[in-house]
Image (cartoon, rainbow over all chains, first blue to last red; front, side, top):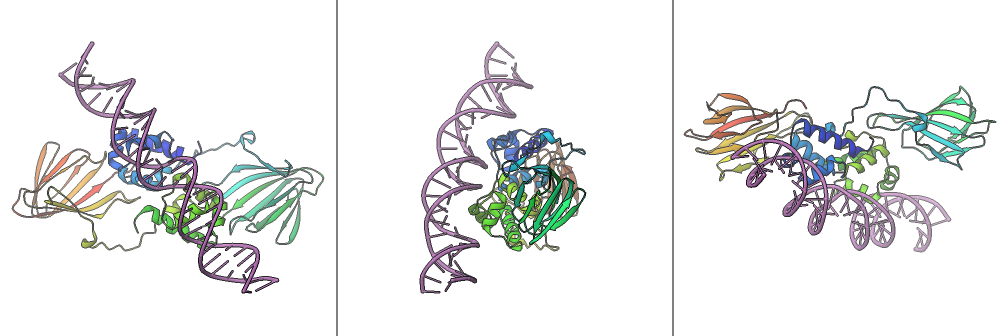
Length: 185
Length: 185
DNA sequence: ATATTACGGACGTTATATTGTACAGACGAA
DNA sequence: TTCGTCTGTACAATATAACGTCCGTAATAT
């Protein structure tokens, strides 16, 4: 359960059934057709913002209560369940452990770079900072025309709203923890 | 400035210009076409929820920061600016002074009923309560098979999630303040 | 049992969101 | 100037959101 329109679907259906309203009744209250309400609840449609607005107003509930996905207190992420991002002929792998969510200001990745592997990153959005902690191997980071070589246990923090590269010039696999941080809006 | 998609338009444009991003850059970051971004900013389109989601994620900002409309500290509502609702051959008029908004749990109306005028209200959503204060004239309210006649200065509070009617059986125009209240979700 | 009503979903049509391409103006560099 | 690049918008094509109508089922009443 990830996609936003499925969250909306669940929330809307739960609310409606909780209040014991029929699709038709909701249609009447909101000015949105019964068909559309049904499709939204079944996750078959991604309504426009004006439609969601009509629903929230007609039902007298807040916009966010429709799109808020109650986060479990505990969230377990297993390595094998993570969808890896690989490139440079598979010579590096990025594991998005905690990708961006609505109200979180950072995301957490683990990056593995094979011996000799190379990774060139586009600038992130302005203000973004990157925090890196090296767990295994050695990694050379180039940013701002500076070059820094980190070994296991070392860490670095830099403004990532400019091009930057990672190079594994060491003798073995490099593994680092990477945190992207986006300052307040 | 009322319509939700215009609020979104302003917020998005303000954010983009603040960050000094081009339409094309935003398109690249979000995966939403440049054309669509432009139309949204100009208020020419009501994007679907998945599109808004892509934008919020690509820009690393919260969903609500896109739709939140900073309320002014003071809000003046003039009678002549209010869009009246009239029926029963114009024998009653409803003035929506403070209609429902996202995080407000009530709305405020003023209702005028001419002598002899009659108003039959459909049930509101479950849990809704109605608070009435009579300012001028006399009004007879029927709800739950009970009938109550209020005169100037009287007030009543009742569960409005069932049919109810208002009748002006007095000798002059009746004016009341009506507050609809929606308990927590 | 049959009639009746209410409910949710299927279908075809219309409106509009979304995309890709093309275009005119602004700005700098040569 | 002229070229190139970058900006935001206009346009046509496509995908899909939104609607009205119809239908099958389930529940209730008679």
